[in-house]
Amino acid sequence: MNRLLLTLASLVALVGLTGCGYSSDDLFRTDVKTVYVQMFDTREFRRDLEFMLTEAVKKRIATDTPYRIAPKEKADTILKGEVLEERQAAFAPDFRSRQPRDMQMTLIVRMEWKDVRTGRILVNRPLLLQGVDYLPPAGETEKFAQQKGIDRLAARIVAQMYNEW
Image (cartoon, rainbow, N blue to C red; front, side):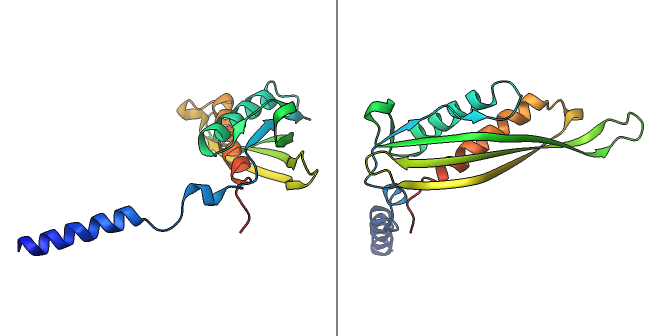
């Protein structure tokens, strides 16, 4: 019985040490070390969307990738984009108050990631959409939905930086 437990424990340890053969470094380009994130432009009249998105993308790059944020003069690549539109839609109106019970916000952006050393475009997405549902009766505000949408959009933008297989 002890021998069986010892064998089983050894097998589990061996599997744990070898892993599945993949690492997070396999997901990202090895020829890029630094990224400059240019302030996103905007066509929207909503305040601070471009600032919030730029900061969220920088934070995601710093935490979720092996790339470092660098000044423009020292960066291998430049990530830039533009907030094209923020749309609001109301669903399921309350018949008594005539207020919507469910709202949806959609953010639409364009993004480009360029290697400044070679001039090559690494990623070009003319349209990237992110929708967020929120419930005003539950106290969820438009600002809450904006932040939630921006966080999700930043994650999707950084996911575009994965290495192509």
